[in-house]
Amino acid sequence: DTGVSQDPRHKITKRGQNVTFRCDPISEHNRLYWYRQTLGQGPEFLTYFQNEAQLEKSRLLSDRFSAERPKGSFSTLEIQRTEQGDSAMYLCASSSNGQANYGYTFGSGTRLTVV
Amino acid sequence: GDSVTQMEGPVTLSEEAFLTINCTYTATGYPSLFWYVQYPGEGLQLLLKATKADDKGSNKGFEATYRKETTSFHLEKGSVQVSVSAVYFCAFHNNAGNMLTFGGGTRLMVKP
Image (cartoon, rainbow over all chains, first blue to last red; front, side, top):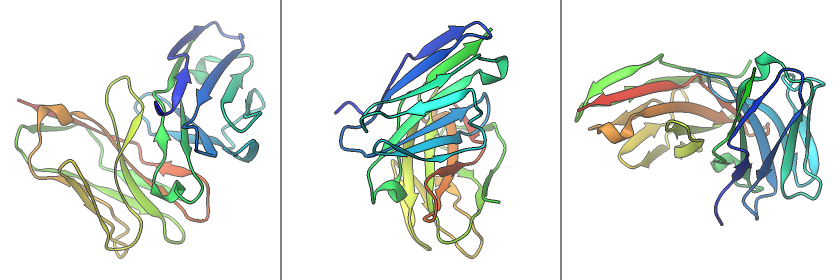
């Protein structure tokens, strides 16, 4: 297993465009998390899936953001009508049931720049 | 609300110096505590963890002790090298929730 994979690594988009990011978790992990990290700050929780069910969403996740995990494996995070304030690193992480208290495995992130 | 407070950086040290990065938390219940490290352009790597009071997490010469009475989890290393220059994040996972709460990070710069 190669760990948590995220694609793309970098994305530059014009304001108002839609973008979609993909995350492939560690195969045996049933929990998947999305975080956002702005420059010089710690990661902030966005949303959490257990298998295909989205169980928790942060207030940070505005109506322009949507996340899916259709078959309980990979996940996508879509941002519609991007704004400059969406520029950040988007991190995906995964863990297994009963192991969440022992730490998550993070991907390398997708850096979004909205111009 | 739940939060993590870390000492602000950057922390600049010479090689072989002793490192301490302070971390305190505010959380309900009995959280698990973590230190993550982030090298430039990369995601977060779990450095060490402690899941109950008085536990000491350790890895690669780094240590941190879960102090419930002071709600602290300070990171220490006896002798630093240039290669450990990175940003360090303190975090906790509350057993009642499904998320990690992070501090703002502390940038460590080690000079030869």
